[in-house]
Image (cartoon, rainbow, N blue to C red; front, side, top):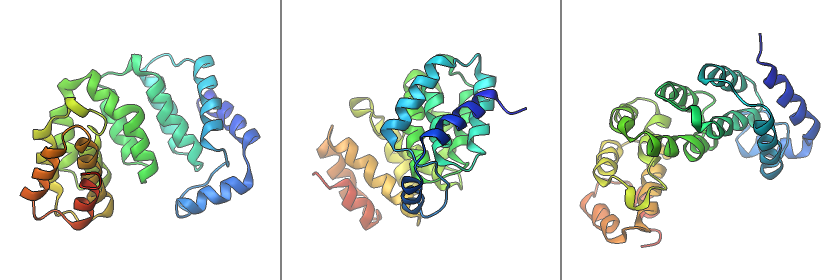
Amino acid sequence: MPHPYLKEIQKIFLANGDQLIAKEAKAYLLNQFEFYGIKTPLRRQLCKAFYKTHPIKDHTELSKLIKECFNEPQRELHYFAIELLGHHKKIWSIKTIPLIEWMITHQSWWDSVDSTNTHVISKFFLLHPEHIDACTSKWNQSSNKWLIRMSILFQLTYKTKTDTNLLSRYIENSQLHEDFFVRKAIGWALRAYAYTNKKWVVQFVKAHPLLNNLSKKEALKHC
């Protein structure tokens, strides 16, 4: 049986959708996903109200609802599921890791993957640092470009808490990767850390001539 919350949020999204916005959003993501047509501020307003009045009992129920949402075609339901997991951080556990990995590798595109990092991944590892090495090392060695991207970007907001040894290793392992989103991630991660330690980033780029031009350009954007 489908989770009853899914039907409820579908009705809410349908009632607040706009066909013109949906068409524009679909085109923006290269016609890969369907949309109800709800702009982000309104969607988040609707979702926050829903989360507060529809508590989830446990991790099993949470995982079930998230996967059901991801199996629907509308992108807003994927965003709903990502932020739903972020809202329920009190029930995060080691069980959350395979769920995160499932989310990264399903309905994958930069918007959902990066949103999962913002709302879940980066915060999860701050709460559970004991899982960082094993988990992100596996991602970095994966054949899935989105997992590789997340191994590089999960520290994006860590500033002085950034593990530069880990960041260096993951970038070095991925610097010859041909995918645009991996190359962009390398540059983005370095650019973000440059706000904390510009000298380190400049030296890192100089010491790694094999970095592609996109990564270098992004890394040194504000140096």
